[in-house]
Image (tube, rainbow, N blue to C red; front, top):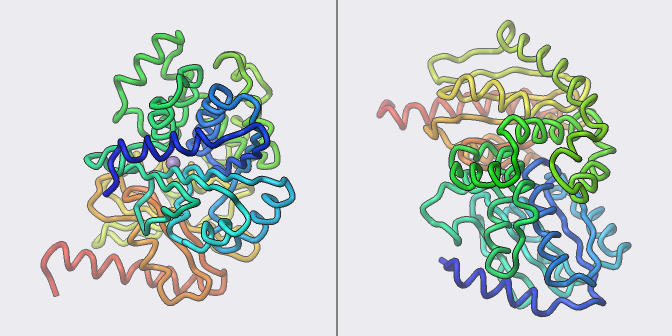
Length: 369
Ligand SMILES: [Mn+2]
């Protein structure tokens, strides 16, 4: 496996080849950790390559099924270099291989499971596991990974508080206590401030998706956390909280429970996308439960979030196995947190698959046949 030093050298090589004629696309996961990764990355670029043009391209896992609109956007923006942040593009290696046809260089910085190496003469492939093999990668949020990698090449401390928001967004506050406390002290911020910002991002992501990039730019250009929090984002948070509270109550009343395999499934059809935030919230209260939030409210695809906080069952493997044999199904992620989707026509089959996979897993874990 590559060492931390290998990654830093490879990354510095990429930086040394940047010029003012380059156009860099920062393709980042459209969530809190992904956005904060992009801001940390851009803070580094501002330092070492202030004349290099860059732009953010928030992206969902939708690019795993159809990367073509991404390619179109990249080519329309005449980007010759691409950075992928918080997106496990190695799960579908064709995404990067096809981008290599028109891009001069690509950097992948990601903290999900390692599927396959994407290293090539054009691509720099960096995973959290390479920087710290002892850390569970989900506990090394991408914003912190990006921050640490950059710290070997430039001073990115101006974005340290944004990094902490990213850590909070990926539930990493406990794992990075010392770093977090130092930043809070230096910035005169409280943990509540960090949580408010994290929730504002999650709220805009769900309630007003079309404003996500505007909010990202506001966070990037804010002189400090207080300036960002004073922006127009609070109203989305209130709307978001109302919807969440409704579905939390639904979970208590209507979740399908399979107690013998420690599983609960809640089907939802929310007004806007609260699936991820809802599953985080319920899962934190039920750490030993395999939790499925199954969103059937979308037009063509049924989207699932999987959660389990005690690491007894691997959610990324459950996501992969549960879509096995379903045409157009996809799924992946971390051990405690995973996501995926199937065409709506297969929702029922997927539900059965989950129960079967978990029954097999439970038997294996408890030595029954
Ligand atoms: Mn992440």
